[in-house]
Amino acid sequence: MNRVIETLQQRTSLRKYDPRPISDEHLEIILHCAMRAPTAGNMMLYSVIIVEDQEKKEILSRTCDNQPFIARAPLVLIFAADYQKWFDYYRAGKVEDFCRREKIPFAYPSEANLLLAACDALVAAQNAVIAAESLGIGSCYIGDIMERYEEHKELFHLPDFVFPVAMLCMGYYQEGYKKSFRSRFAKEFVVFRDSYRRLSEEELKDMFSSLEQNFNRDNPYRAENYAQLHYAIKTGAPFAREMARSVREALKIWNGKGVD
Ligand SMILES: Cc1cc2nc3c(=O)[nH]c(=O)nc-3n(C[C@H](O)[C@H](O)[C@H](O)COP(=O)(O)O)c2cc1C
Image 1: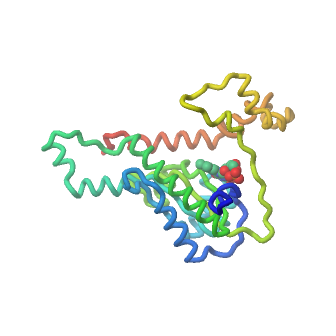
Image 2: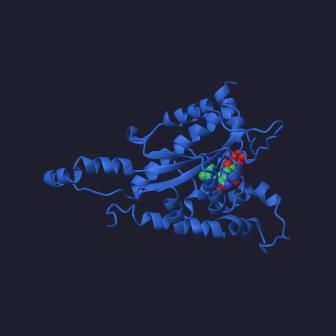
């Protein structure tokens, strides 16, 4: 098997890191590979913030749903959807005046721009993950960077049209570290041909059967089945509510009109 496929198949999320710092050479390779990722219109609608300040790492370990391993990661990278640079460039180029003259509607960054920029940022982040993995550096995404929008905005001086969509914690594998592979849903439930196929209740039962096997009725959430337990732990949990609030707050500005 070729080494790229092997690296992809052998990757798992790493949350315990060897404390030695990432070498400059490896950091350069990781960043270079991130920046070689495909990018919509070759616009590179993202920015990467290398978090070196230990105090900021400590803050992130609390603001990102209290995950202490963030503070122990030798390398923390924030991937932010970024329309600010292009928007500022348009402003400098008097694009609004040009639009008025040529009767082209002029729009501020919109929800669509945010989604596209988020795609860009995530594609770049995943390149960084795989480049790092190939160098013996494990990683873990932190989705909770999308929470506490106002605090993160202030902490990293983010302008209005920059939104942090993903954070990566990275570090070398500790000696003797044993990976454990988390299972995935079967392909038939994920990959469809030619059109989407809504799954029947029967198929959903099949899809979730292995997760349901480990369900314990004696749980602190008083959940009676795995769906209830999962909702309580993930989708309906306080961190998810905070993420919804935070993203909604950010979206107020990404509305195509801006807010003065
Ligand atoms: C968008 C995204 C956000 C994630 N956020 C977190 C997180 O906040 N904390 C964490 O420990 N893992 C996080 N993960 C890692 C997932 O838990 C992990 O990928 C999943 O359980 C599958 O495990 P594996 O990566 O080892 O195969 C995130 C992964 C993704 C893709």
